[in-house]
Structures are given as structure tokens and as C-alpha cells.
Length: 115
Image 1 (cartoon, rainbow, N blue to C red):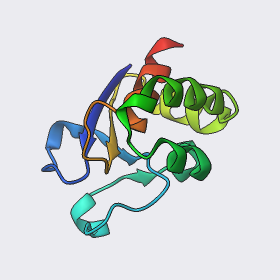
Image 2: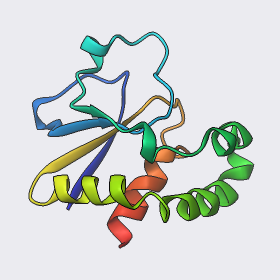
Image 3: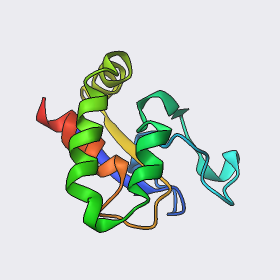
């Protein structure tokens, strides 16, 4: 399975494959046309409560990962859908966060690759 991570603000590339936004809220300042998404999977994003608690604070990263992994166990259908899509195809998990190392797409990719 091939997953790539990319900010929604980065240039779209033909080798992105299937582009799916994995955030629960639409990124600021980006039109749907400019995002060039194939899908927006709000239901696979962290809960609003978890997202607000994390607030992209690096010191909360380990606990955020643990909590989001826990939430993902209950999001079986969207997880299955992404895995099916990735069989033999590249899937680009698109996100809006500035921090490229501490965001929900990083955790989601780790979860998808690890099972």
C-alpha cells in the first residue's frame, strides 16, 4: 500500500494518485478547485474534541497519537475504504496543518501502514 502525505497548500502533482483530504474542517483560503481532491473524508479525521485539545502543541503529540489511534479503531469503514483504494494505487493523504511532522495525517498513515 502506498500512502503519501501532502499539505493542501502544496502544488498538485500527477503522481499524487488519489487525493483525499483527511481533515474534519476545510482548510482556510483554499478553493475546492485548487485543492483538486478526489474525496474529503471528514469521518476519518480526529474528533473535534481531540483536535481542539491537541491544538498542534508538540508536547501533546504522544498523547494525541494514542488517542487518535483509539478513535481510528472505531472508524472501521473509512479505514477499510482507504486501504482498498491503496491496493496497487498511490493515495495522497492531504491535510491543512502547517506542522508537517505533528498532524493527524501522519498518525493516520502510520495506522494504515501498521495494520
